Image 1 (tube, rainbow, N blue to C red):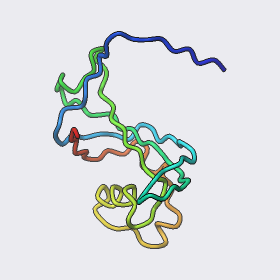
Image 2: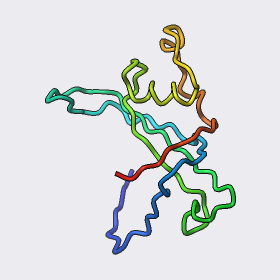
Image 3: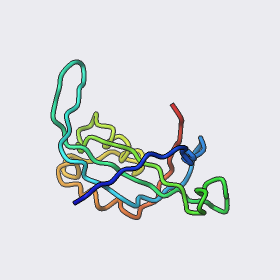
Image 4: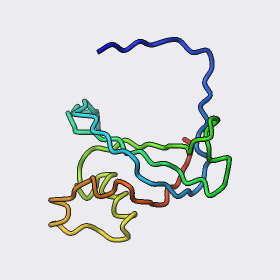
Length: 123
C-alpha cells in the first residue's frame, strides 16, 4: 500500500458553527490501542472515533464549500466505565444511565444511524 502526500498551500477547512445541531452517527472507527498519558502515567488504551453528519435543515452555513453536509468527529477511549467520556455522552443521548448488564454488553454499532443533539464549542 502506498500513501503519497502533497503539500497544500491553503486550507479550505470550515468548522461547524458553534451551537446545538442535530447530527446522525455515520461512522465508528476503531483507532486501535494507543499510548496515552494521564496524571503522569503512561497507559495503552483502546481508542475509537465517532463521526456525525450535521443536519442542514436548509441552512447553507452547515454545508461544506462543495455542498455536502458538514461532519464532526470525537475521539473516545473505548470504555463503558461510569467515568468515561463515552459512557457519559451515551448516557446523555439516551436520557438515562446504563444498567450494569447493559454496560457489560453494549454493542456500539447500535448507535450507527441514530440522531442526537450535538453541542459544538470551539476551544
